[in-house]
Length: 593
Image (cartoon, rainbow, N blue to C red; front, top):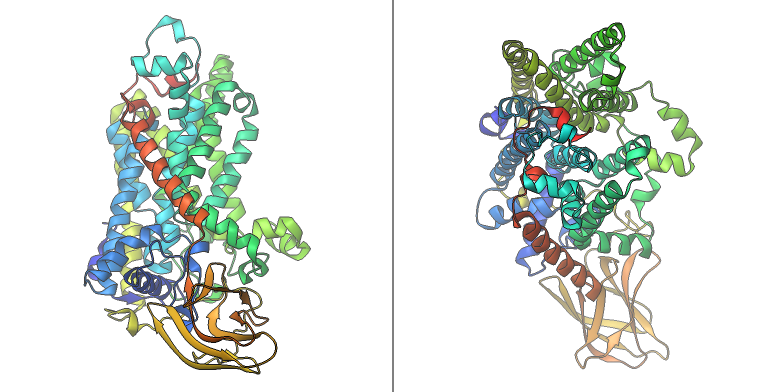
């Protein structure tokens, strides 16, 4: 049901949105891989052949799947649609297993809420209207982050209630006894989830980190305990080690130069949704633009709206009942605390995404706060994490209803399913009808161009270099050849001083020039951002310019591979059900006394 558009509207092309960008990324990634560069760090054919270091700044790990499909001969548009179908399936599966672990093994309730998440309006807007490949890929892993953070705090070592087992197995009791390896494993879901987020979309990772940090401070009494700190630190280290292949080049480039993305990070774009935009029952807006007059759907969806409304009603009634009965201790039950935290996080995220948050005041003041807050570009990005949190809140509701009466839980579950299906079908139907249709089978059909965010600020974007080398006075380029994006240039410097050759390539760290006899030439950045090779006085001969990853980049890739093997070993060592899925417990309250 989440793939209706992929099957019946595979050729839609929303205007002003990102589908062309990601089709180009897939095409140029395939081109880079075929040229022998793995992993791809520079898209050499992008930007009219001047090269673009997009992979260093914008993770493309998961795009290797459609890129390899394209290399194998599958048309570009079809390769993209296969990727969408894979991500839809992955989203449902990850959400199901995380919700199942969160509920202590309740399969039906987990299935219902994973269904709601996969068909959520904002996620499908990302997939079929915005075509925001990085963001909807990241949304597949958000449930793992939520569940991982919950497990770190819920697996609280201590005395078992009344000396009973409470449905725990020996593995969980070992964790309660404080076994260090088990404490490290307790941080695995969060560490893996954050690493997968970072490999998908940096801004979603940033938003998640910010909220988890705030929540950790709110829960400071539990955060600053030995057990929880070990788990949080282990999760952070696991994330860093798994993501070393991306983090090291990213940090290296950010320290090496200044880029246009930094200059634009203090400016918000698009519109800010209001209450009617967030809680609209029927998907509204248009898929043809991000400006307000042609706004896209920005509602959280009627299913999520109902979950929030029912939880608020339930919470108020529960508070009244507990006060009347004088059972104040139950305010501290895990279910109540978890529900309060999830609902508060969801509502705060929706508030931040709206026009009621002081975005304009923050932007006008500038400075560090503006750079941090406005780097998300669009306020409505926060609807994605809010949706992920809301389905866990819905799982709490379903679990509570199931304990009272299964019939009530089933009725509510069916209602939620219907409310998830109808808007999702309507949204996909409108996406197929309102957008133009075009079949794209090859990268050449869309042109290999780029955006401008990751250019060095020195790059002269308006200059016409005609794809040929230039040289300083006294230095002559006799001939040149380009093979697999390696430039071989025959040059002669008859002057009395050092000269230079300017190649029509954007300068990024990693380019190096070597003569035929093995002499390394200084390779610098020119004032207009091109690659500049210094030619010694009196030199005549050939030099080769090529792009080579620094050795410590390769080391970071090895570290990530070793970390993957380590994580797999940890997951396969013994019974890890309590970390990645759990088994059915007597109650959701078993996690914390």
